[in-house]
Length: 267
Image (cartoon, rainbow, N blue to C red; front, side, top):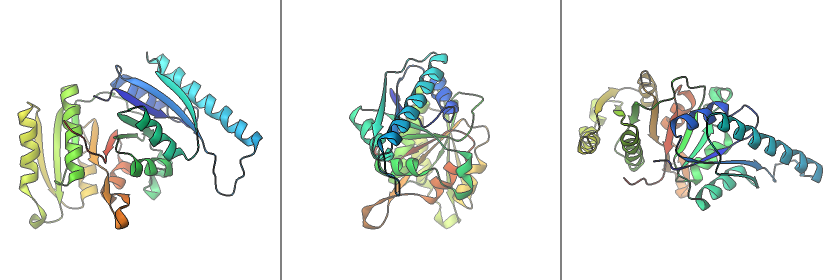
């Protein structure tokens, strides 16, 4: 499914939990490890000495990631230091190399502000490649039960396709949850549609309708699931891409791995 995975790394041990997770869950994928030397930082002049230090740090980060992956039985397909704006370079590299998934850590330190980190957010706004976020160490590295929040929008339909593909790859079950604030807001066709799509592919599915605040109800459903797949983006004013409030909150608070889907994903 995710045949080629990009692993941006920033420092020793910071991404160990996500490196171990992808190595265990996607052992037959090809892995690409990059670190970005940011050449334009506001208020900071990039001197030759500073650039050298940043390059040394990037090399250490990449070498550490390769070592962690090697211990998990994974050989890295390619490693590279990129130069420029981190999000722009990561997105460009992923597109140029035909990568299927970008994996990031989502630090607990960022939780109080409900931010995923500047680079992660900017990547999500610029790429149509699914993005995997993991906030903390995952003990049971498996995909047997997938939580799929859906509301029938185009973003949700793309997430549905990713969840279905994931379920087919891992012989996993899907829980599709639709949250409406009132009964009047509920569209029964949404759950019937995803149920039909799964039944056609012989995927075991449970459909759930909840009333309340979407992010809160989705987070309440996390227990006993291994991963969340959720639509990420929508168009705001002037056609710019913004990260939806529900997706942002769920990503910041989730205690299990989460895949954010913005671009079209065909089965």
